[in-house]
Amino acid sequence: MASLPATRASRRPSRTSSRASATRFDRRLGHILDHATEVFCEKGYEGASMRDLSRATGMSLAGLYYYFESKERLLFLIQKHTFTTILEKLKALLENVTDPERRIRLFILNHLQYFVSNQQGLKVLSHEDESLKNGLSSEIAGIKREYYRICLELMEDLRRKRNLDFNTRTAVMSLFGMINWIYTWYNSRVDGNAEVLAERMGNIFLTGITSGGSGRKNRK
Image (cartoon, rainbow, N blue to C red; front, side, top):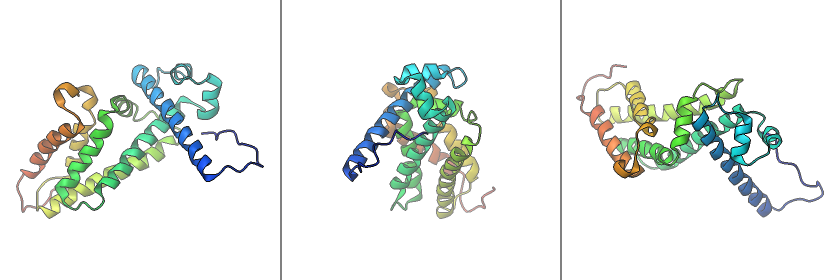
């Protein structure tokens, strides 16, 4: 993304003013990405135009092209912001937690806490997973691989420490299947908040993978 226009070279902003400017920019960017997400959710990536995005974000069409170049760049930033945020929060939650089952429950909770409040974002990520081209997809793929790797390590840790018998890859993909499609059915009035939902889904998932017996070699 193009940088914001620079101030006069002779004026050096203080650290405080720099932080304040960065915070304002981050809020503005978050506002733009939220509205772009709404447009992609409603119209789909292919059906959305830069003019649609301009109207939704409140930016002029020229300004939108100047800062973001294309709708693909906006989709890239939506995906990068989402996955980076989830990954950073997950790492913070897992720090100093050693119980393998608790760590998996925190993984589920972290994922649901974000997407229960951002269901449109989850729909866009699920439906537009392969829309990024021109090299932009590789950076997103790297973040997603790290997220998958962490989940796989959590499963392997549980299997090893509890001497369980389940296929760790199948367990990971099954878990993602559970938590990534809540936007199609989640209703807070009947399903509870993210914490309630995470506990219920965690109980279902962990009961399934821990009830297959113990003391047998994992068949990968």
